[in-house]
Length: 119
Image 1 (tube, rainbow, N blue to C red):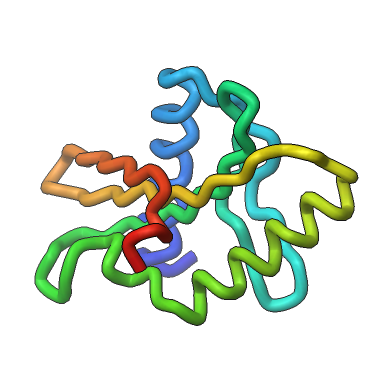
Image 2 (cartoon, one colour; image 1 turned 90 degrees about the horizontal axis):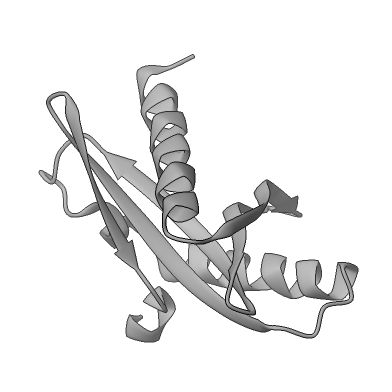
């Protein structure tokens, strides 16, 4: 597996641990619909949370969350719409980003709630 794939997988694992430690129940991992993939679907306090995880080893080209572009947002919204319909859910939905930045042997996690409000 390519090194960037290993880094991305590690970021998702760290994000899941972080979410569980903060009271989130993990519902799905890597949910796919057409061309879209939602990294993590979780639930907390009656809210369904779609989480995009972005992991980087430096900020040379920008912060990890800067790599969630409008096209990706559109795909994520489409996927979660399908998920809610497929599961026949009547629930509030929120979109978050978890940015993971590797710094030597440590990882910094930044959780951005309602991330798409700022796009």
